Image (cartoon, rainbow, N blue to C red; front, top):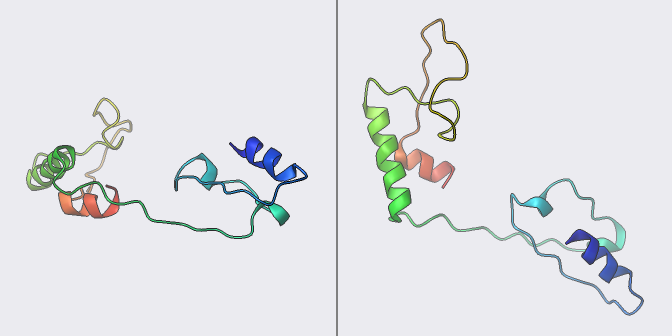
Amino acid sequence: AISEYKKLLSTPKSTGAILMGVCRGKISEGIDFSDDMCRAVIVTGLPFAPYMDPKVKLKREFLDAARASAKARPSIDGGFGNGQLSVKVTAPTIIKTLSGSEWYNQQA
């Protein structure tokens, strides 16, 4: 996308171009738009996932149940691994889990 954008800007009859990207996407980090490559930036927010979406509701319920359970030991891998701790814990460690609403406000 960036090479096509630069090529379009360098054509003699070009009066400019619009490059659109998604926040947290490839275009959002580490690219220098200097001189004539960029004159303005417009950032719009992406909406939260619907609060009552079945997947969101299930995740909130799971987090609330895990927090309420005295036996809950959340994984360090964020739920993307095999669920086992990747480090050996020798002393009692307090790991605070997010509630369903805290997770929704921070990450959904």
